[in-house]
Length: 89
Image (tube, one colour):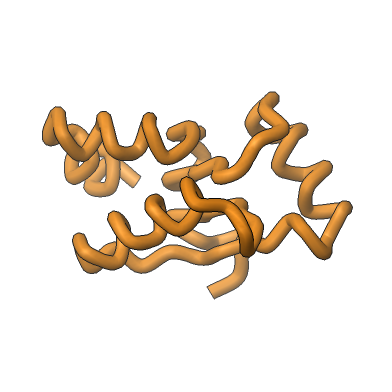
């Protein structure tokens, strides 16, 4: 699946603990995602910043909706809202 049609897109970098935590949460839930490594692809980092308005990773999108970083994703999961957002996409 390409980033352009990914239902869940995670902009990340390899040495980011929060990126790993976000990916583990998604994997634990069985949610497929596409990962974009911004460390070695400055054009993709610029894309992430333009889309999210943020410079830190991870930045997570569900469809066109910017979810935020790991803390935001985790909060959605704990409130039981993640499934609803996924279903709407």
